[in-house]
Amino acid sequence: MQDTKNRLTMISQNPIIEIIEKEEKGVKYVEHKEISKAVISRLPRYYRYLGELLEDGVERISSNDLSVRMKVTASQIRQDLNNFGGFGQQGYGYNVKYLYTEIAKILGIDRQHNIIIIGAGNLGQAIANYANFEKRGFIIKGMFDINPRLIGLVVRGIEIRGVEDLEKFIVENEVQIAALTIPKTKAPEIADRLVKAGIKAIWNFAHTDLVVPDDVVVENVHLSESLMRLSYRVCSMQDREAELASRKREEVH
Ligand code: NAI
Image (cartoon, rainbow, N blue to C red):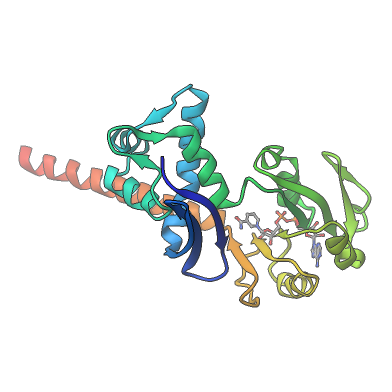
């Protein structure tokens, strides 16, 4: 198939450096490659499609067939996957299981990530109630809030705790990732505490840009921004249709 043996990804700042351990004719060497954030951001979609192919019992697929399913060009697929040493073979296509496993390794979802949720309100509880994250290796270890009425409650087996022992809990439970589902005014202060306690990644839902050291990664998730993009697309479509209809009316008269 190909000679890539192992991959370690240092995901800190853009660009992302992929360290690829290779072996050629018995000689081991390490290759450093810069992978753009754009490529990394497309990998979860590849992973999802490959998972569906696996469920359908498909063992191999050409970049052309994958491109039809995913509605992206075959050359985009080849370019993206070549970043990681290429997983395909001329005339054979991609081995679905292998590619699925390798992308999981690159994304780090073949390992366990311990998570905590700060803010056990509507959004925090919705995340805690979504059991599928565990299948991807994201284990929610605890939830934290300042509301005494919530502290002590249990959501899907996960206890809501007060923030007093946040730092101790992070260390004892080897927590890597914190989901921030608190008001934006409270987010910077909590983010500072999380960083000092050794958190490596923040999944930020609070509507504010956090300032963190270089060795801490932040992934901002803003549903409203996604909705605004959707609004733009639906409005442009409606405007185009209205313009076409008005042109047709003018032609008739
Ligand atoms: P909510 O009011 O139901 O929950 C917020 C929780 O945070 C409350 O239980 C509150 O007691 C707790 N809290 C406040 N300060 C805290 C602190 N310092 N430490 C720990 N807990 C604290 O609000 P909801 O609907 O769950 O939204 C949470 C946040 O997420 C809001 O800032 C909201 O704007 C944002 N949000 C973001 C979305 C996105 O797509 N990024 C979507 C929906 C909400």
